[in-house]
Length: 289
Image (cartoon, rainbow, N blue to C red; front, side, top):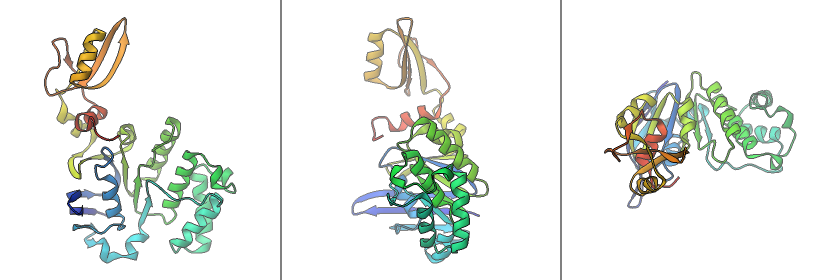
């Protein structure tokens, strides 16, 4: 299975939301990383055939997805960023309703819904109304509905936004467990969500794809641009006003400052190994979070 984006472009009037994106996806987990407004949601909606591209195309195994129509939707699972729940539905009723919208056989839907509720850890809440659910429980129900048709392509737009650290870890593990033999595309601006589970990372900025590759390959490009130094509070304040500071911490009355810069920020600074968060701040410092 191969999903190809060929010069994919989406324009609204004079604003280019996505600019000639080329990418190839095969089974595995792909993380879309970028600040708000970078084009992640637009790209996902184009992949899901919700939006029509201004130019370019999305191709699955040699065929344009717009020509595949219903056959494409049969292999697609989607969890949008703002997923609409019916608060008075129980978890089971909601999944059965979503299954009917997807045209699934009633008997299969009942068995699949029960199985997925167990997988996402909601079997004990299956008869409770969604309005009583926490944010993490709703997100787990959301991924269950995305998996009802056992999709080969799973699109998840900001699935961990608003979740506490424990729920985010659980959700990441859940995604990893479903990823075998599937194309999973995960959009986020939370660096650790892609750092832990993505096989490849795509970095989007202002509608353009600026980096694509494994974590190690893309962070290696900013080697020599990440620095640490031990300075006074006054010097730390000056550095924060001048450079992009990734982290600072107190240590015995001094401040350990980590920052990204193309040049050595001060005489005592030493170059250190970069991480994905450094790369994010290198490209997106000062942009919407």
